[in-house]
Each structure stands twice: as C-alpha cells, then as structure tokens.
Image 1: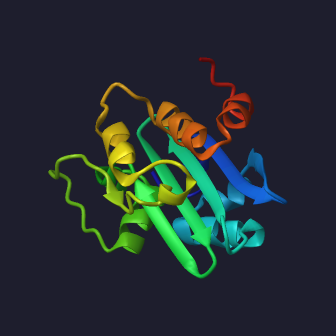
Image 2: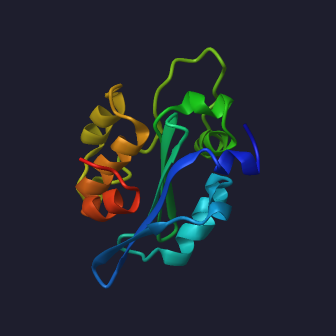
Length: 162
C-alpha cells in the first residue's frame, strides 16, 4: 500500500523528546509518516544533541518502526524488514538501512538494536523483545517507551491498557 491511504493504517505515531530533562510525548503529524526522511525532518525540529528525539510508529499491527535523531546521527530500527514488500514507510526504512528485501524472505528485524542503549534498553533486551512473536507492535513500542522512561505517558497517549 502506498501514498496517503497508508497513513490511515498507522496504529501508533508518537514523538518523544526531552525538554529541560522531562520527557514530552506527543502525536506525530500525518505528514511526517510518509517516509523515514519525513520522520527525520520532524524529529530534527525537536531533537537536542544529548537525548535526541524519537519516533515510535506502528502500522496495521504489521510492524513497528523506531527512528531516532541525536545530533547529526540518525538511527533506524524496523521490527520486520519484510514489511517493505507491502508498505512504503517500511520500504523507506529498509532503503535507508541498505537492506534488500525479497517477497520470500524470512521476517526479522533490521537496523540498530542499540538505538536505545543510552536510554535504558540494551541491544540484547531490544533483540529479545523483537523476537517475541506474542507482542503486537504497539506493545513492543510500549515496552520501549517504558524502558526509556516515558511509558505511562506513551500508554496514555495511545490508549494502551495494561
């Protein structure tokens, strides 16, 4: 699915950044959800050099996407690279990562597992979450938000119940 209709399939689209040490959590605007490049543009507006800004996106209960801008660095992690065969946002993530995906590839994460290492979630912990087939993408993002220190605000914003 491509284009504006794809934005209608977004389950979760959250921006998180720190303002004077406190996490601010808000919805990402629809126009930022077109591609990783548009997400990066939006994040650059809010990012500081220390903690940066983070986008947490879930599409059609199919995949989760994390994008982090921290200074000049941009980190990307997608929970299932094979989603690139169906979704333009996922395709923009795999293209940014330089990962080629074929229709018959096994599903699996791609990108920087250390994207949140300085915020409280190690690469191995994130890898374990990504390997949990029982977690829906928005639940994965809730776990990420919790580890980073803004879990309750994330859950409230996206109406996730415990």
